[in-house]
Amino acid sequence: MGKKIINLGLDIGNYDVKTVNTSTPSGFNVFTTKPYGVSEYLLYEGKYYIPSMDRFAYVQDKTKNENAFVMSLFGISKELIARAKKKAERQQKKAEETSSYLPNVINVQDALNETCTLNLGVGVPPTHYATLAQKTIDYYKEHFSGPVVCEFNGYMIEINLNFCQCYPQDIAAVCGYVPKKKDDSVINFSSYYAIDIGGWTVDVITFINNELDNTKCDSKPLGILPMYESIIKHVEEETGKRITKDIIGSILAGKPTLVPEGIKDFILNDVKNHIRLILGELAQFGLSFDLYPTLFIGGGSLLFRKYIDEVKDEFGLIKYEFIENPNANALGYEKLIRQTNNN
Image (cartoon, rainbow, N blue to C red; front, side, top):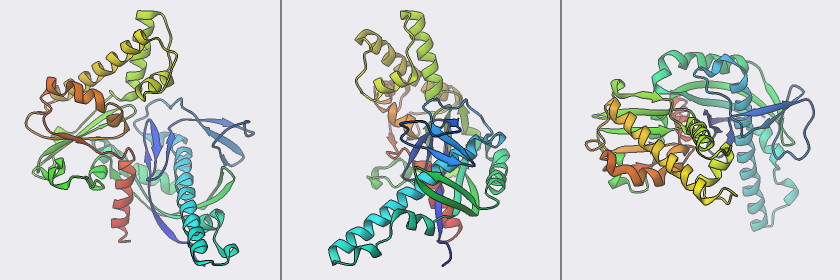
């Protein structure tokens, strides 16, 4: 039986690697033996790769090193496993409902063996698309020129690349977006902004009369990770305490910490000021929030949602909405790769 070709969207972000169903931090550590107690591991060519919350430094051109390849293996493997588990669960449920013979039900590994030939959709920022799109396609074609075999959490996976295409991120997210309230959505306007608050950068694209206006597209180094670094430095200067990125993340997520309330309030005020900095920089770039509606994209936008709501009046932010799915770019790449291949 020939291998089934599937379409898969892969978003190698500076903060997380995302597919439609999975998310993994954009960082890893390498070991020659599997460390005790790890919840996730990738075994490839005799080395164990363990996801790390310490993200890699920002690299504009991810084809410069092997990190993007390994992170791609994480993303692809986890997505294939997620889909295989869903398929096995569906068959199990159907067998139970119809009293079928359960040993004939496919297991996860069997499902993986059927679904490892890919049409892969990836992306780069719109401002870098002209210079990086083909390089990115060539990178994947080179690294997947033959079958790639790896093990993820005990599952054996063979990845064969059938086709790869690169799309502009954020534009892809808009293409894949289906708003809950269609009649009142920002995307019903012929002109609007789309702002993606990511790991290292904040990217903005502008649609005028339903066409991309390249003169109003930009990328600024004001994402989540630079904010974390700024807050860590500010807190240490003002209080003498050296907090960490994971503590800031826990505070933003409303999780319990041992950080005193005074310092916590200090951190949250810095977060609000960072949102002011982002919107201020974009206004200075030429965005008129009082004239055009705004669509916020990405996990960073969702993380900052409360603070955007609080400072909106300062920048004339009248009409805006959020894409609720933090994996929107991966979803968009997958939709576009499916359309490209007409399946």
